Amino acid sequence: MSTKKKAKKKAAAKKTAVKKAPAKKKTAAKKAPAKKTAAAKKSPAKKTAVSKSSSAKPASAKASKRKGGEFTDFIPYEEKHGEDYMNDAQKDHFRQILRHWKQELMEEVDRTVHHMQDEAANFPDPNDRATQESEFTMELRTRDRERKLIKKIDESLEKIDSGEYGYCEECGIEIGVRRLEARPTATLCIDCKSLDEIREKQRF
Figure (cartoon, one colour):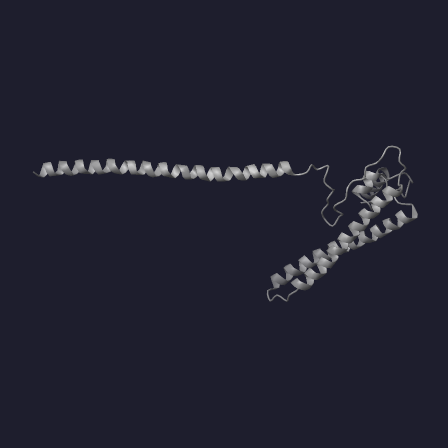
């Protein structure tokens, strides 16, 4: 009788094992659709990103933008065939660029002053104080460079009024509209500027 009972127990154990196996397959089958849904959720995001890039305006139609305290939001001047260099339209174009650039720099100065007043605090930790002082020092150096740049902008505006703007200070030839748009405070043409940089390298 004992051997028969053992055989029955083994048979019952096999049946339970067989019953448990399909349960694992069913759960695995149930989990698979969840991955598909996650992938399906991610795919629309890519489509939307593509649609956004396609709807964006071409780079040529956008106004030029610059970082690091330089001018932003201006439309490049379209030169007409046979027009005079530095005519009234070109002067107005560069006058607007210079004034807008100066306004942005002045706003940055005001923003820095307010930021330093708001963030100024006497930290008990020396490391925190040193970090704050280094940040303020870097900001003040940047503002000092921009202050010198504002002075150059004012000089360029005076040259526009006097009719000397757009001509090289050394050789007297035209600097060019595109070069002036890249650097409105330029006072040298490309050739004279290249020679000036070579001389500076030879000094050091």
